Image (cartoon, rainbow, N blue to C red):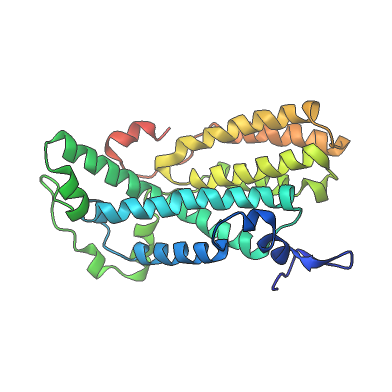
Amino acid sequence: MFEPFFGGDPANPQNGTEEIITSSVSKAWPIPDAGLGAISYTLEILMAVMGGRDRWRTMPWMVTFFGILVIPLGVVSIYFIIIQPIVIGTWCTLCLLAALAMLIMIPFALDEVIAMGQYLWWVHCTGKPLIRTFFQGGPVDAGAVDEADALASPSTFWKDSVRGMTFPWTLVVSVAIGALLMLTRVVFGASGAMANSDHVVGALVITVAIIATSEVARAVRLVNAALGLWLVAAPFLLSGDTPAGRIASIALGLALLGLSLPRGRRSPEHYASWDRLVL
């Protein structure tokens, strides 16, 4: 079983990937979870290339199902990564890569899903047929035909893909803090409840920071402020820390709290009624 990083020691001949795919957590599903994931990822790829930049109004049904596949499935993938070292006792390299890919897709999908929701709400408020619009799409009053997709160069396509996303240094540093927290067993010698807490908080910090790179979800970064407060309190409430780990937890918690308050650079994009939520 391919596993370049986790497992293979003499006391435990099974590697991390093999342990995880044969664990009770994996077998709890009525069907193989790898097969379910493969089907889901294939559908996501197919849906990602369907339609154009205006599919939020021309194909609301597809954007809805794409959002359901990307956002909840991404959150579920992160959940399984969080519990791997706590419940199973190891990690899986391929699982980490799959979860990272799913997490990165979430901020790319959020603005489109919100635009679709705003459009359907506008359709409802104007008395237009909601169900028919959901499945067949519809126009926008005073709108114009956008033919930019057909003329776009690869660089223009990439710029269009990341519209509505910015990468403030505060979020980048928050991701680095989350990664460090997931390694406190190795770096600071944490163990027991404290190590498990650091792992869970680190994974959540990374998840929140990456999702918050989407401006429509920028307010989500405030969750990291609450996680920072927990890091400050955790050494006094949990066992398994070390003197160095205790200092690091408090320092990282205060840093995370400070990093989570600024909104960061705002792009020139606007999101209609959602603008007031880009905090």
